Amino acid sequence: MNLLYLTILFPFLGFLLLTFFCNKSSKKFISIIGVGSIFLSFIISFLVTLDFIKNSKKNIYIYNQKLFNWIDINNFNISLNLYLDDLSITILLIVIIIGLLVHIYSINYIKITEDYRRFFSYMNLFISSMILLILSDNFLVMYIGWEGVGICSYLFIGFDYTKYKNIIFSMKSFIITRIGDLCLIFSMIILYNKFNTLNFTTLFLEKNQEIFKNSTSIYIAMFSILIGTIGKSAQIPLNTWLSDAMSAPTPSSALLHSSTMVISGIYLISRINKLFLYFPNLLYIISIIGSITIIMTSIFALSEKNIKKILAYSTMSQLGYIFLSLGIEEWYLAILHLIIHAFIKSLLFLSSDYLINFYNKEQNIYKIGIFKNSNYLLYFLFLFGAFYLSSFPFITPSFYSKDLILLQTLEKNHLFLFIIAIIGSFFTVLYIFRMILIIFYKKEKINPFYIKKKYIFKIFSLFLLIFLSIFIGPWTILPINKFFIKNLFYKKKLFYIELISSILIILGIIISYYIWGSSKKILIFIKKNKLYKFLFYYIFNPKNIDFIYKKIFVYPFLLISKYLKIDPINYFINKNILKIYSIINKSNNILKKNISTSYISIFLGLLIIIFLLI
Image (cartoon, rainbow, N blue to C red; front, side, top):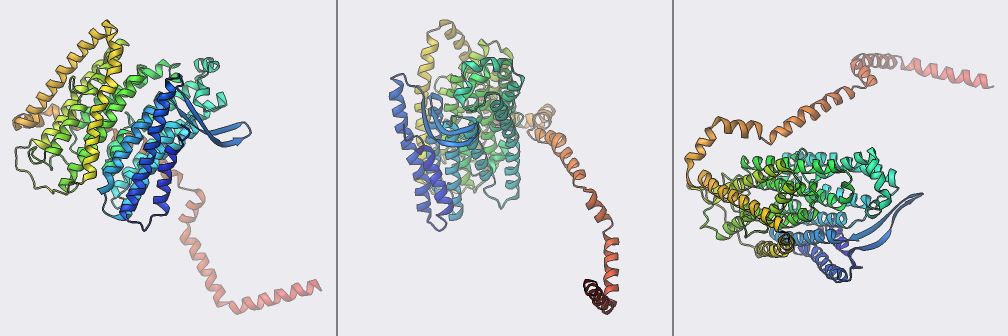
């Protein structure tokens, strides 16, 4: 485990090499550096995991690697140390495995060599920043990784900087996530002021319990951390940046949505969950935010036409379940659902990229359409992803993880949140099968599509993700089933929830098929319905949130800045500029006409000065 620091160092060295030393390198050499550095990090992670498992048998569950003192100013001491436990090693493996597969998939993604180098450079920095965030043992070092993934997402969203809208979207994501980041800095200042440390382990000490219980400032600090996590993990109301982030290259979106940017907020809450236990009200707020996000984003996805944005809303929705789980103090179930979601979401994004390439980068599901018989591979990939995302009964691990979250929500007496969450699971089935049916079951004539070469690296990555998604099921489900089978009361309640969930999922598939798959009459009737238009075009329109933000924040800011830019001196000069110019011009003309007089007066002045000196 002494090699743990290399998991961060290898991707970061890859970033440095690609950025500064590979300007004239070939694409083959660039891919070797880009993919090779992540592969080396994967090997180190694998060895570290084996060592960690071996030590866990000896009842050693935590490993600290002290690297060096970073800041040492009077009493302010921050060390760069790495911290490894069950949580960090789990997320580390997810990031490395998915990161490696996305890198392999991306080998044939970009044609232009300069963009190719830039793409892999950003990807390496993305993964290096995320690993630093995961392994850091204190807030300040974690914040470097936190900002690192934020900068990388900004760079990827604006990757194609020739398009003006991409620049706007990248700025939008950067500004919205900065709101949360500023709150996180504010909370760090409060915590350090109270405890004289930012180390996670030290903050958890028993001697600090009374301060946490009775301090209003600590409550404000924890609330600020909550805002930071909401912004990073794209939960309502700071979720509007994630759908616009779809302007990023699709492989980077797969990484962003599955194992980096959006899970960093979840990781932070899980890392400091002991601190949140002192504030039950904040945990309840977390569960409410998660529940609202589940239902709202699921409805947004139902009216969306862009394939990548549909998947973006599905990410927000699934993260909503994880936030709900965190809010009811089910930390293990939250991470379990996160693991399952990570693999299936990366598979769906990479599959959508494979599909989009058939249609010359077209992303509108109504403008692309492929009969399932034309490409069985794409049909299988999407159908597999749809079953997993919709938590199809008994054969998908997400079915068990989601139902356990629902069970625990009910057990903690949150009936209203339970109802919202189970309705959200019904909407999930509707929007994901709506997408499948529109793309693969079109009755009308479809436009010809552009069949491209089937690259071996893309196929390899996709099938390995399918294998991992299947493998992850027994590995995660068996331990939780073993735990719940012991309690017959739990088992009985879980059975009823699974039954209700199964009925809703199957009903959702049937309804989806009748609306979007079999007959157009129902769809035409729904679209003409005034209630449908009112709900989806006015009430549940994702643009409404942007509109509200503009009215409340953007327009007042522009108005204030308009008055602030009027400096009194500048205002006086600008208003009287013509008069001043006229005076200067007349004076200049007078001097030109009387230049000889000026020389004589200067000469006389010098003579007077000399006379006085003598």
